[in-house]
Length: 213
Length: 328
Image (tube, rainbow over all chains, first blue to last red; front, side, top):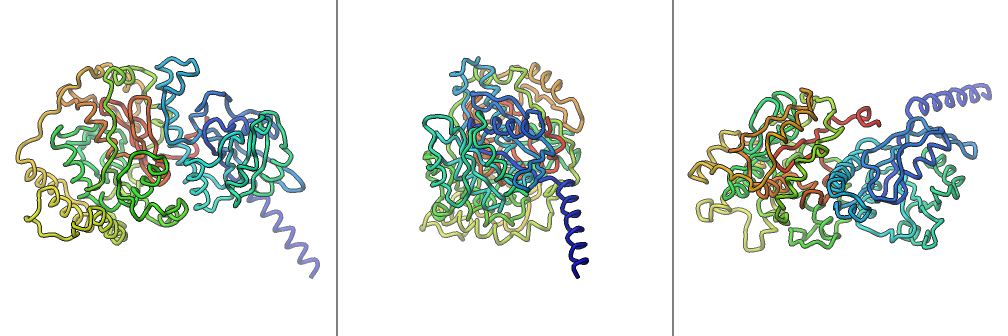
């Protein structure tokens, strides 16, 4: 019996590995604009593949197309997961070119950025519906986490039964308040981090390996 | 002639299901929007849409739209009575199994109200359209697969499967008109608009009306041919815009833009208003200013992904999405 059990476990491991290698989980990084999604995506991608995903900026809606990094292998505490990271445009209910004028942008550029950002939100929502197996929801921990966009998106994610981790980003900033996020969404695990400074990334990777394995 | 495929020229009435799944004739997904007239167009858009099932689908999605608007503290007096207590999860779950093809209707249902888009700054519109960078970007590059599009067949048997939803939504619409408006009335004893609504509901419960029926209904209602839309006061130069668009989207699969003759060019305000009514997932307040209905964007298979103020737009069709197209 012992031999059979061993054989079965061995086959199971091989199958699991084949499955996970042939079909990596697609993890969408979602959140409002300027939460640090691309900074996080770049941090993860650089740590595990050496490449970045896309440009970061303090101007909202820098990411206006979903960007994907495939076959990112993350291993922590004996758990290993291969994921495709999808960095999505920030989701919002209003886009106004005037917001960009404050960042020394010409009107034409601002209007174009606004249009692209709107299309980006549409794309992000479509990805959420069709193409992600799990979600990392990134929030700026210096801001109030209870907003229409956050409530609605997390509600949609829950309705899809997608595994979700909430990342309280920007803990390097003075106004950071992780507890406020944890209290706002107690049904989900909240992990604090600073994607920019690389703080607490060990726990971030451990949770990713645990949740999305 | 509210919508015309820019590839093959096929014409669709307002709220046509066929159009929203890609042109059944050629697979194109670019269309020209041509409001009938300033006076009768809003009413006819509403009526036509409900005739093709818009009443049912509109009310289902409007509950989400209401939630968005209410939470956003925007002005709203919509029929959000029951739906207000609905959570996002409840709503999404309730609709999780719904056939997406039933939500391909875009037009406003009878009795529903929309926030009116603010008037257009003609100069802004001109700026936006004349800007060569405002052309549709990478999304115009997907492969077209019209034959596989769900909902492309107007006789889709799935339509009847969701009859009960349409029915209940119609009842919702009736309720929202107030307690003194019983849902079933004698046609002929009520005013013209209400007659249209009842006809629409009836049609929505059965199936898609034929273009002939629509034409007949329009003729009865209007009694006169539609006026020629007025020239936009200082709108974009159609030739310049056509040149840009042709450069931007040269492939057949993408649909070639046919520039409307200047006589057909609609009033920009009117155009935007009607498009906002029909495609409410993205509301264009002004060039560069948008309001997005996240629930609708999430829920719908199709939506406008690129809109030009001169009446050209691109509808995203579900089968044209593919992960391979989105890698940078």
